[in-house]
Amino acid sequence: MRGDATAVEAPVAAPPLFEARDLVKHFRSRRSVVHAVNGVSLKIPRGRTVGLVGESGSGKSTVARLALRLLEPTSGELTFDGVDLRRASRGEMRALRRRMQIVFQDPLGSLNPRMRVIDAVGEPLAVHRIAKGRAQVDRVVELLERVGLGAGDLYRFSHQFSGGQAQRIGIARALATDPDLIVCDEAVSALDVSVQAQVLNLLKRLQAELGLSYLFIAHDLNVVRYMADEVCVMYLGEIVERGDGDALFADPRHPYTEMLVSAVPEFAPERIGDDRHRPVPRGEPASPSDPPPGCRFHPRCPRAMPRCREEAPAMRRISAGRTVACHLYDPGESGRAESGPRASGPGAFDAGEEGGQR
Ligand SMILES: Nc1ncnc2c1ncn2[C@@H]1O[C@H](COP(=O)(O)OP(=O)(O)OP(=O)(O)O)[C@@H](O)[C@H]1O
Image (tube, rainbow, N blue to C red; front, side, top):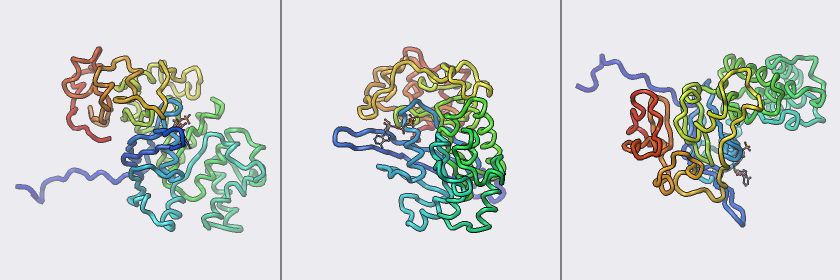
């Protein structure tokens, strides 16, 4: 009998803090339409980090700007803490903006060189009317101490700081409004290798202390592997594979992820930021203003099949916590591929039929 009161109910997953569904962004000009983001869906749970990786031009920053409503999507849905961002009123949006912040790539460039630290970090407090006067100064000192700086830095100008210190100021500024979500868009790429790990560890500590969620964008796979609980791999505006960070890098399934990962010899935290280990995939991505038909990766794919040229693959769940958009993982396709999906143990296709989410 259903409805047995004594039955143990399966735990209900907590709703994600942020969710994007089927997000599309096309930039139109008189001459062309750039298909920058093409049906991206992702969820960011509370207190967790979702990493976005992919080559330059794959649409990572556009996803970030859409998530923060700095750009209007062509279509798709965005929810933050249950609120539909596309239908939020101006007042709701203003309140939500406090809860979503961004840390940029270029720490010195993103700070006004004529501003003293107290003004740079205090500005969001003033804009959002969080604190003024003495309370504002106290809050700025508290924020600086959180990121490893202090009261002695209050009246210094940003150009007086090193890149790593400037990024700490950028992080303090992002924390000023007490956000739930921080988008880190290549937040450590511009820093010296020795400083990158320090800033990454700071971000991890802040996450543990404050329960922050991160959307963490980087082209350096080792950086993303170090930071992300879940990784989404983007290719030409689409997510082609997603999964648990370590498992995805240890056992990539999409031919594009394989290509990226094979260019990084081995994972080691000390390799973070080491330029020699940047992925150098074969070939060039097609132009997003003229994407290939079918699977967008097929012109570069070593395992492309005839149907890949015509039919776009749907996201398919191939095992617990792993989804892939690739025809190689369609049930019945393994024999036909030039070299089918790598059977890493039994059940290379397990749960293949459960997929379908994009
Ligand atoms: N405002 C814009 N107008 C026209 N095209 C744009 C605009 N912004 C981005 N694009 C294009 O959209 C595509 C995706 O760009 P995006 O910056 O999101 O990629 P990315 O993966 O973040 O790359 P990178 O790592 O180089 O920043 C690129 O082809 C880019 O030229």
